Length: 345
Image 1 (cartoon, one colour):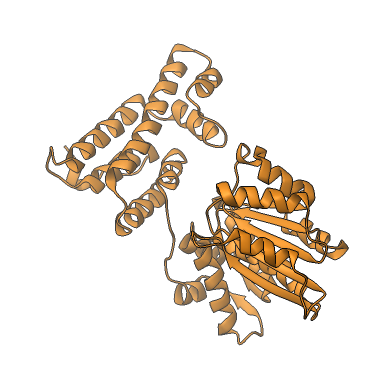
Image 2: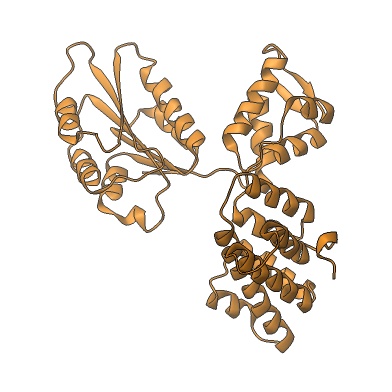
């Protein structure tokens, strides 16, 4: 059974949990919270005995099989949890899960958490066996445009309300850092002593530090969406985190080369959709890339690529300068931001 949401999971637990439940996500917070929902539902019965295991290199699958097969002397039902963290079940683990799914114990539930399994990975025998014998749930962190809604719901669960501007500021300060987002909601709840309350921009400014995290893909998205302020924040965050410069340059250069290719298609009146498919540009980036290809002067994209080429030489010690400043200048060329004073020629 393929579940689509936490609400589907809740409804399944109300009807009666199947013997196996797989929760997979690249967001640790979402994995743990979903596992906690299952745990609370199944251990509400005091006669349920819980066992939890971390599936690291030391895990003993033979021992796990023995534990599952041996009935408990103290409880009629048992809950077993096997947590792979952000990893996936490998050879021995995959074989073990397939065997358990083929003959699940009648007096136990098995909950498995792991990193997100792609559509291709979901075709593997162990995944198909687990889903066939029980249920699977994939969870995705909220995308940038979904984050305010996610925060609003989470705040509402704590009896808190934040006005529109305060909510936008809160989302900006925790972007890309779901654990920090959850923590700041709890902090705001503590300020009210658990009594609920209403907050605005000033309250958020006073209570919430800037804990946003960015990846190079977030930086590219900000440039393609023509958001110069977000570009500057993303570059500063990546630099502060000590991210290596060459992979950032490489990823951005690929996007700029794609953009230049699409600009050529627009100029020549060629099929832009076909060009996107050929270059592997798919939604939602395709829409942003096509819009920018039509709106951005060709020389701006070329200048951005020149900045990245110079940043690459700096990163490799073949030229002098500040590589991160050059990267920032490159994305600002795309985003329509001001030229950096230090680079004006």
